[in-house]
Length: 382
Image (tube, rainbow, N blue to C red):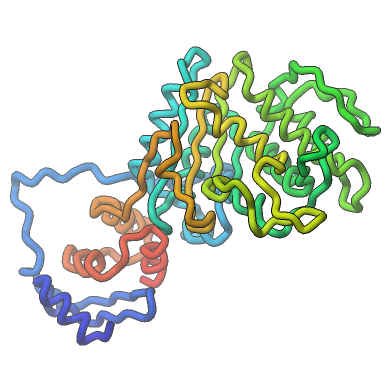
C-alpha cells in the first residue's frame, strides 16, 4: 500500500502522526517520529503485566546442532549478531512436556506428536528446538530434516539385497548416518549392539559392537570414489533404528521428522525406478525403516522410552497432518502480542535495534506481519 493509504488505515485504528511509514513488497521498514501519546492507553496501577516468553541465546554446540536440523535460510534468519537466538514458543514447550511423560522405560506408550499450522509459523524451528532440548537432556536423537528429499526425483538407488522388491537409497542413507553421528556424539559409543545380524557383503564386519561403530560402518561402506558396497548404508539405518527401539536401551530416544506429510502418499510421482515406474512408499527401504516407528499402531510402544515428533510443511504437498491417527496435534499460530514484545525487548537489550516507545511498538504491531519468518526480516531492516 502507498504511504497515504497506510496512514489512512492507521488513522482509522486511532494512530496519528506516524511520521515515515513505507512498505516495499512484503518487507516493511518503519521509522517513526512525532508519535501521538494519546494513541496508546496508559497503564493503571492495577494492570498485571504477564511474564513474557523467553528468547534463548544458544551456545556454539547448540547452534551447530540446530544448523544440522534446519534449512540454511531458516538458520540464517535465526542468527543475529553471530549468535542463533530462538523464541521458546508455547507449542514447543507443550511438546517437551508430553515427551517428558514417556521418557521413562516404564511408560505405558510412546508419545507421538504432530506439529501443525500454516507456512512460516515456526514449526521447523520448534521441531529442531524440541530435538535440541532432548539431546541436551541425554536423549538419542534420530532426526530427518526434510522428508521430501527422500521421495524426490533425484535419488541414488540400488535394488535391495534383502528384498528385491525394495530400493536402497544409499547416498541419502549415508548422509543421514553422518548427521546422526554428528548430532549424538560420543553417546552412541556407550550404547551396545545386542542383536546378531547377517551382512551380505565382502566388507569386514568385525567390531560392530556399539551404535557408533555400526553407524560409521554404514558411512564408510561406500567411499567417495564409489568403491565398496552401496547397499550397506540403508541396511545399517534399519539396524540402528531397530536397536534404538529396545526396551533395555537405557536412554530415551526421539525420532523427529520434518516435512513428514511428504511421506503420507501411497506413491511418489517424481521418483522413478530403473524402469521409469513411479516408486511406491512400500518400495523405499529407507522410508520404511522410519515409518515402522512413526506409524506403529495407536496405543503401541514402538520405542522403549522416548517419543516421536513430526512436523508438516507446505513443501511436502497438500497432505496435512491434522488427520494423522494416534498423534497429539499442537498448532503453531502467528506471534501473540507478548511474543512480539519479547523479541523486541531482547533485540533492544542486545543492541540490535533501538529502544522503541509504546507508540512505535503499536505501529510495528499494526503494519508488520506476525509470522515469525516475516517478523525476523522486518526487524533486521530496523
